[in-house]
Length: 231
Length: 231
DNA sequence: CGGCTGCTGACAGTTTATGGCAGCAGCATT
DNA sequence: AATGCTGCTGCCATAAACTGTCAGCAGCCG
Image 1 (cartoon, rainbow over the protein chains, first blue to last red):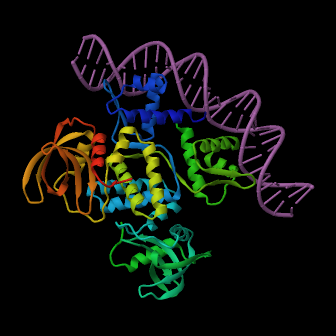
Image 2: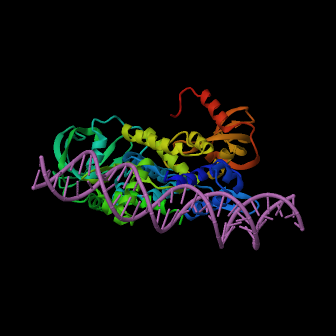
């Protein structure tokens, strides 16, 4: 078991969380099955790693408000859900909780590899409340196209019901009131266009990458907007 | 440095994430400053801990899509923001992403101490879209009262503008369209009542705990509802 | 003050990690 | 098929880390 010690440290944290009141080192040592001396060393390790556990002589140990989540695996979509949710909280909740949401978002972003941090920028530009209608389009395929910077061929019906077929360069997905919107550069119009996913009749993912970086497109599109959209 | 190994494992993960292509064990060993033999053992440790890193002979190592967040400290409010955000995603997003939100929520809940898991049940029963008006009431104080099961004394004006003073047992906080709602047992009416936070004129937190468990109140209140509210 | 508790140092015994070596197996290219 | 590269495992001696015991000092409480 090469993880014996690490495991014990996590157990220690869990134990500390269980108690609301201060706990003496002796108790913690017994619960983790280790000597008192070693427990002190373990506590020191936790503090060195940034856990906010404090000890007071004559009192015991308390875990400061704040909870350490152990290392966790999230799938790409779960991560996107966390990010999207945090953004919504950051913009829609009361100030105090909103700040907490922004902080949580920053903490998650800080530990993400750089190529994933882009996702935070491009995923979910807007947030909206109501449950939206079912889509014909496969939203995960759209996200995949955005992530891989792939050209998307759309069979699309606009507001007047005119059907067109066009190749677009999708770079972001927005969540509006009832529908999702694909932000993309439209090859047909040579300009930025947005497409409601519920108006997509059919679509196909091309194997070829579009010739520009997603982040660049996003940045340019932002400049065309009058009001700052997010963040 | 009693954290040498743990730190190295995290470094290994980060390194694996940096590369998109498969990386040979030799490279990883050099980057982490360790022998090849030890690297193989480290990889085995990571796999044992659930990291989805896979190795193929003649190819190298690749980190499967999915991202391990290292242990992170979240404050109580940040955690609530994460939970609230995930719930919103779980109920408001498209099915696939909604599922991811629910999964993320479950993973977080699984590692939370039991007394914190209650928070997931009682925090944010409803979600609503629009930015709400400023409150006089200190929302964090309300949350504190709920968490500590404290009696709340309200100076409250109802819809007709009648002002009353009552002691209530708050057990949940709801987020509606424009306002937040405190769910509570009202000592005056001897029944469940809800109170809009923007109609609270003044309030005070009592030091005494109310005589019932928050979870029990929540459960009973749920039974009085016709439709299942959440989950 | 006295009891309890956190905290640190030293030291010896034990455990664990590490690196080198050897060998087997799978994948890709020739 | 054959070669080279690579993942993977077992073994073992050495080095490093961890652990427990003992001792002593300091801070908080009643």
